[in-house]
Image (cartoon, rainbow, N blue to C red; front, side, top):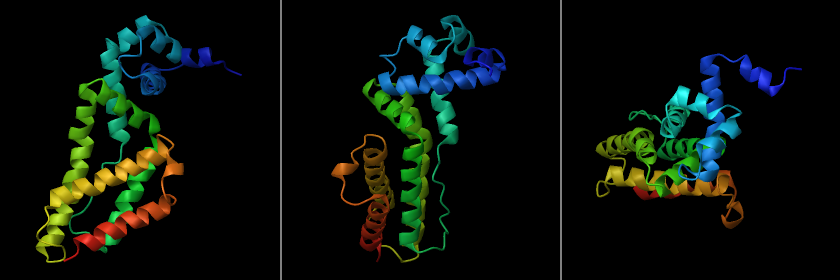
Length: 205
């Protein structure tokens, strides 16, 4: 059987970078950027500090590589403004995707929260790229449905979109990242059905 050290020796440069990004993401998620030293990163990744600096220049470069990798895999929650489904079905689908994403990438969510506490530009990058994209897509969908006379015209589409996404995100991370499920009434499917029903009922004209 090939040992872990030998496996790393057989890696290509890109495979080695991907390995370091994966391992380092877990450490940053636990300790945050400020609390993670280069020595700790090298130990966690099973490589030398010199190799980390060679591949990423510095700790900030590695941190940036992690976020960029996560952004590529993160569901942008794209939504067609002309989606013919019922409003409640569309909102249910979005909520299910948010819950699935936070369940699948808990370390990245923790990393984002550490970034906010560290006042790092990384969290701002996520908000600009993915959160902004999701907000714009849902707001555009609400705006289109309002123009068709299906939704109330006294509510701002962007504010409605922000409210739905924020509420769903808050409950999703409480359940899947911070293990607060015992404090939340109902299970995941019931929470999602409730969110979709409340919002679709409140938005309809």
